[in-house]
Length: 398
Image 1: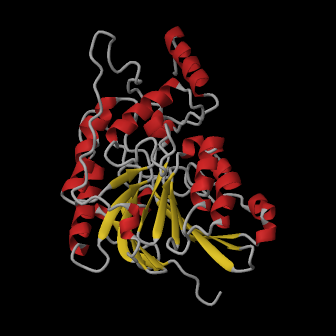
Image 2 (image 1 turned 30 degrees about the vertical axis):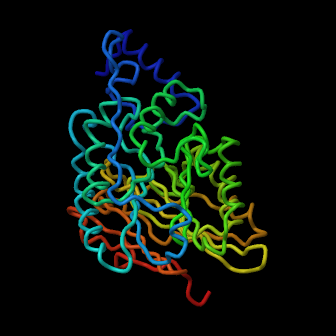
Image 3 (image 1 turned 180 degrees about the vertical axis):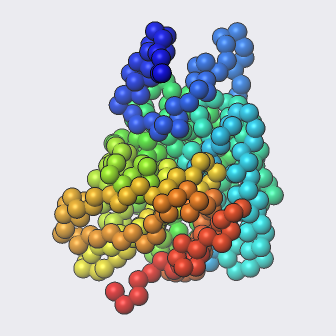
């Protein structure tokens, strides 16, 4: 028989009140201590260490203008089952494979130059020891052994899912996020950084990259900054625009399907039209602990048919999710009928967790061509989401 004491009932009520208005996934609601409970007032608060600086940092933006061939890696959702207690084991398997890939390509024509992470580095970003004990040293292997910079977009587990900038929980998570990523995020005052936000951009070669905080996708200041960045780009140089953030606009795992989370709704309504207007090449997200690939096709203002690829890569080590169903796209397609918007679900995740392995994505840029390769690790080494593990991001005979 299920029994409730007065104390447990009070706790249930407190949890319901605190989470109202901001979606928090069930896995975030565990028995770990909150940031406020993690240390007593008499103890010095643990400070988050910075991820080691990259052995081979990116050059100044202007200095790479002539580069048209290179690779980069994308992955997400590395939070572990025992964050704050031990190093993230599943994440370590990803890191081992990434370093091997970086070294394999280092002497070729498309070397890996950096890594993008789509969010949820740790289970509770407000707790310093989770970063220090479970994540920092692992990622530092990428930047030292692999030698490449690492760029993290904040997930809901990193800075909370609060949409309010004044949320105390968000502020604590942000302090730790900024401390961990101090060697990679442009400082306040830099034209490629939105001051005070975990929102930034950088250019390398013929591609421009933008990290957004999708937890606050309704925030006007962030949107206007992103809009200004895109409007100010030299499109003769930047053939590719890549955005990475945590919440997927469309997905079919437990955060998608029939569910439309507020962040996803805001991305659909505000950012996707912006990205179409500026002919973005790829949008990377996580949040769903699986791999899936969408292609959004549309006709631009000049009557030219275009595509925008949207890749969900959340197989970095967090507990694996599985397919839950297709989202209802009818209203979205109807809203943008003038642009002849359509969506194709190119890769669906499997219905069983065992169908969706830990993985990362290797992206190879060769002029105007982009090729993605999905690399599974451990028991997922044979993962072939495209009937192979790679595909070119281009339409043939369309």
